[in-house]
Length: 567
Image (cartoon, rainbow, N blue to C red; front, side):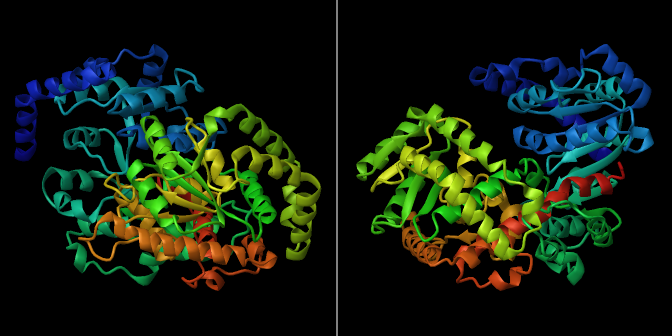
């Protein structure tokens, strides 16, 4: 109690600095200066119908700190309303609206755009009240939260303490780095962790960390049973056909049986569910792989930066053929810098912006043709029948589209590189790629999205700095299906990456070009086992391992709903 008293006094004393912080941020982004009454006073002028619904039935409150967390919960919210609409939610939530709290203008903007698809009395988005008791009490009095879900890591001690008085609290998709473990071992942050009825971790690694926190153990002394520590990985080793990804009830039973403590669960990673699983893009990827069998590898630098492009160009400098290069800069301000860097290294740059409409038109035509494939009959074919089907369809229907596409993108010309200098088009390229180097991992940024390329059967290369993707990388590393390019020692310069990166790319190209048709379509061979492709020297099968892990994670959304006892 005394700790909270001091904490509240500290916030009161720091109020001038807090206001100065928003004023300073507001100079760069004026949106930080809007709706300050929500943050400081808990003054919410929301739709009266929604307020009435909250008062009568209570609300489901979801705290998503910023844009990343907001994007993560969108599929969860859609599923919640779908279940509510069909009367499948638990009775006490059948009429409860959703209230989203977030801290940043970008998070607020994205959430407001999303909630437009629902009625105003179903859902609203507001700023999180700051750690002032009056603001928090006003928030609770306005929205009457009966269940509060906090996403991933960010915790507000006073907000959580006050919510606990009237709500059931859950931490979903929970993660916590080993580096920050000691911060949560004591004090108000530890009190916050202990306030949650259940902690649903995104993988076994994070579950073990929360288990240590809750059981008051040192992390290095925590010994999980084989069943517990392996759950997140072993489940992904089950046979899984490409087009059959529906989760089964037995996976729920495995999940519940793998409880780490009365309040720690492994629910799998909701980040894998934020990407719409598009089976047609997987079919497109397979057809395109068949078209290019024993031909060039398509190499993508995704969400990359000038310093990383320079490293990659040095690595591929002596590789004269065997690949097509595509570069997607992370920010628009890097478009010109990277374009000039490519030209300085004697590459002929083709800009997507110069042919964007042609590209989209051609991809639309191709998609329409691919969608004519009867997946129900396709998934029931034997391996030899499937192979024959794909070959015939490629020859009779698709080759003309691949020819046009490769000519448009400059893939038929030596020393040609495609620069994706547009916004929103990167995702459509993953289905055309074989090998993706994930940006932000060879510098201090910490890494960008791995899930999109994995979901499109890309083999993944990352650098040593993947702090923003720890949960995903840890799981993939356990399966030996992500390729981390390390320097020889911590003191080595980034240029040392070049040798290791070059060796990987050269080996991958050789192995890709030696693929047989049978090996290529082992992706959808019912009898194939992941154990057959676990040899670390077989780089070309690492994307299969990662892809099957991705498929396994598609039950994360339903796992969370089940553990939360909402269904």
